[in-house]
Amino acid sequence: MYNRDIIEQLTQYIFSQNGIADKALLQSSVQQKFHLIKERSVFYCEWFSIRFCKAATRNFGNTVLSLSVLHRYDDRPFFVCLVTPARNYLMLANATFLKKISHSSQALRRDNIKGSFNGSDIMRVFEGIENTPENFEFLYTSHENYTFEENLERLVEATNHIAPTGKRFSPTESQICSIYNAVSRAASFLRSEEYQILNDDLAHRVHAVESEIAIAAFIDNVNLRGRIIEYLITAEDDLKATLIECLHTNHPLPKVFTSDKLGDYEREFDHYLTETDIKTKILFLSSNPKAYNIDKLLSFLSTEKSVYLIYVVAIDKDRTIQTRLCSMFNRQLLSGTRIMKHWAGRNSRGVTQYDGKALESVVENFDFSIDPDAAQNFLSACLNL
Image 1: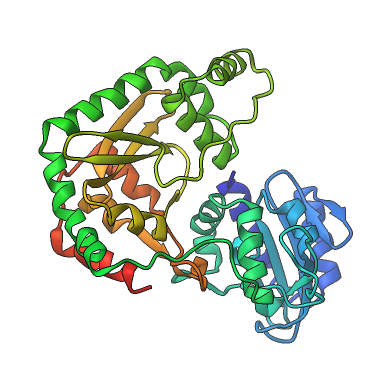
Image 2: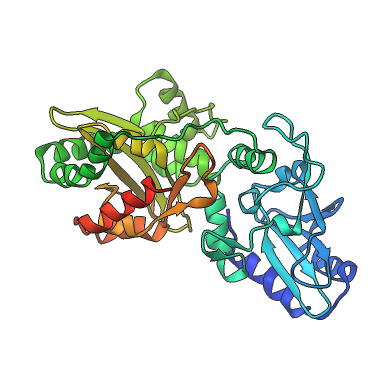
């Protein structure tokens, strides 16, 4: 979880020490002020971890840290503080913000975490957003969507040119036509009786577990929280009963595995095949949820009856739950959908991400409309990746 007050205090203090030009002195004073624990070259507390480096300029190539050590701190903001003669710089260096692994990484594999990253391996710009303090909250809430294992697979490919496990979707001409027709199919579905049937179905499922959703909303781990809420809404098995009991009794939660499919809930009608992805939005927390794998989306939309939908489940501080079922092409949602190009590899077009504010807008001030031109342009951008 991102602690805005603590991180602002950290950045303000470090910048107040501009010109100190002494790495040892700065890290000692930061450690004392924020009561940090020192573990070799890393200083950490509950809310962040930090590594201090020294260089003549902001563009430094020094070795920063081993990937295996970063793994231990990747569940909180991991900062690199660069001390130069004139000023101090801060940047986020969690695994999501690494381009590759540079040092002694020949043995790096998905099952063998080896090697270190240099200062030059840290992204200074992430998907058009500068890696600077005013953007730290957005950047870290983006990082929270990805497990270390997902980042590891990306880094292995970028570092060693190992073929990724994914498969790039190559549509035929008729499939491309179906993909572009997905916009009009979505608009037709939203006007249909089937839309209301699906919306009522999902609303009934949410209502049946609303007290459990309200409890799960306060789980700190973003990925675990999302998986549990998705499971509560869609599952129909004995594990669900065990999960509900654990939530109410505060016992350790069972392992919940959700399938790595495009959507969380599939329902077929006579004229439509719907895939619905459930997205949880905690209204009092910053978040920018991971959306969908672009190749999986295009593969699904290439089928004749396909309609891809997003079901937003929003929870406020009073544990009040609001929901909204909308198309992926909804004007508000599409304007807040970002293509994460740095995730694209030789066998993948990458993934997308939602702006958390767009999800809030969908729930609180819903605009039912679809902009066909914007939707078609978005599909073209995905196909051309």
